[in-house]
Image (tube, rainbow, N blue to C red; front, top):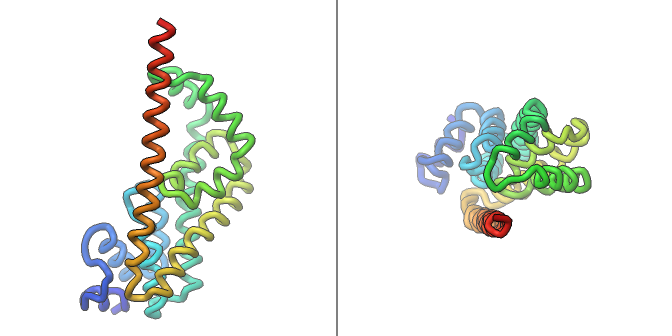
Length: 218
């Protein structure tokens, strides 16, 4: 049986329940394809913890389940696949439907969309590249890239590079830490909470300012 399952059963620190336990079982059954699949699903279901999946893939590589190079290629392929699907969903959804959403959603204005488009036209490449290294945004950034019809080749290149860098950090950490792979989790969780807090602050500030402007206009 694959090493991960054996070590998990022996209580080596590999999880046996929850989403992380599910990831262990997936990689146990499907090997590299399982690692790629788990990372791909992170794009569609952000609660799936890629910051746990990636160190687990590194841990599996350290135990000889598959190679470190294989883990990096598989996880990056999974990241890119998920991002490309979201990119094309954004392209299919298109600007016209996005415009309707802005017109019909309370507190949003068409001018907000126009400013977003102008910002993306100027900084879209950086947003896609660095967005692949930020929790939550890692999943979301592909959609506006598609809506704004960013060049598919450029999107693919930047997504691949950004995903590889992010995946390398966590996969290699899991590979080096071995059975202590879970030491990565607190740092990743702290970073994710910081990002969520920043998003909440921005959203609350936006709502407060927009409501204040609406009241003033009345």
